[in-house]
Length: 271
Image 1 (cartoon, rainbow, N blue to C red):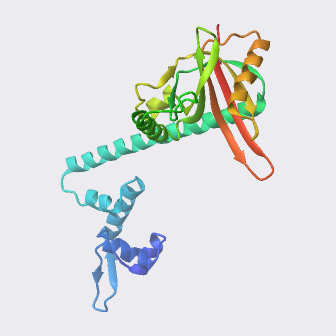
Image 2: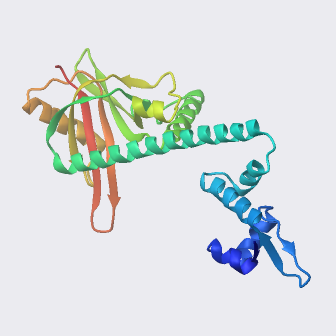
Image 3: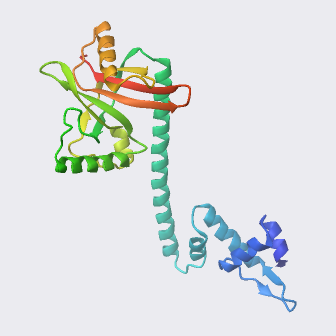
């Protein structure tokens, strides 16, 4: 059976220009009549349907054409194996992104629901990577500055899995907090999902029991206000901190009338 270009276009829900595009790609091989009209046969329709079905599976039109005109079935099999591997990799990445989105959403919900309340949680392993020198070490050598620049690049590579964070170092001998470092915090599960290489000097906070507290510090408070706030809260709850305090920046919202800065403070405690 023979078809005109307008009939083919209507059949595939496109225009005559669209059919000419497929023809230029080599997906159609119409014949010209004596009147210079394009005429297509059933085999043309079949080849176009097959190539478009491949393109719907993620192949480019050129790849679809190559599959359709491939003379070795093993070569076709190899192309499908490659596409399956690519699709699985993309799915893993999308699932990791979805997991991060859901985690951020839960963190925002908890920040609103549990604002200014101390919550005892069992948290998974987390890493902290500092990207700036501690406040006590302002006079750094050139080599150390270079090292921090490298760390900053690594930290930015963590996005979107990592979260901006602030670390208050805990002195176990005196039971006090002093040095503060800005950096990125990331859960171990996200490290694995995104195949991230953690620098050897990153600080690991193992899975365990943590006291967490969400606060909205607005724009006027300073980071060191967090420390006194959470320690007073822990004391009122008769809880003893035993490690570094990490401030996770949960959500920022800046507008003319009001600045929202929701932070989650977390510190390991004695069981």
